[in-house]
Each structure stands twice: as C-alpha cells, then as structure tokens.
Amino acid sequence: MKKKTTIGEIESHLKKKCTEKGWACQKFSGPKKKGIPDCVITAPGGTVLYVEVKVAGKKPTPLQRNDSLSASHGIHVFVATSKENIDVLLNTFQTATGADNGIKT
Picture 1: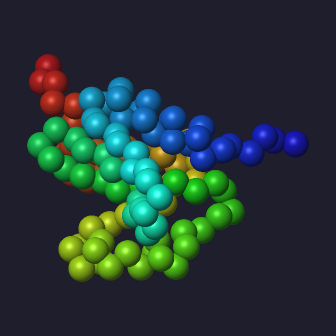
Picture 2 (picture 1 turned 30 degrees about the vertical axis):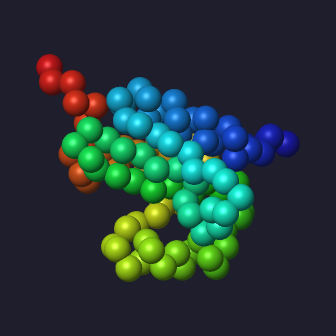
C-alpha cells in the first residue's frame, strides 16, 4: 500500500520548488486565518500565486472556496493535492505569466 503524502510534505515540496526558481513562498498561519489560502508565492516582478494545500481526496471548505476578498479582487486560489500537482501548477504558472527567477543568461 502506498503511503499517503502529508500536507507538510506537499508544503515542503512547494517551498523547495519555489526556492529553486528564485521565488518567495510564504505560509500563512495564525488562529484567525479561516478561509485564507495556505501559501502565497511571489515571483520577481510581483507576480503572485495563492495555493491551498490539501491531501488527496480532501476538498477546500466552503469558506475557502468562497473567500470574498479573493473573489472581489479577481484573485485565483489554486488547490494542490500532491507533489506532482505542485510541479504542474508551478510550471503552468511560470509559462502562463512569464515569471522567471530573474536571472538572465
């Protein structure tokens, strides 16, 4: 039986991949953060991505899905449920926005 990946493992992978790309990855935490995404990623130039991390099979709560601040400001929050999902999400984000690590070769 395959071991289930934990939220901590997924978040660690997210942080590692962002660091490799030269992006900042900050985890939101606190007792009054209900409905706020788990992580905010900032690429050079100010491009921002919000990520809600869930284990496979879990879905965002109604409050997380309907965060009024996000909806009213056109902010998109993406849900990641695996390390592979993180890889696809970050590569898609990078391609779609042109976000890079700021290093010119």
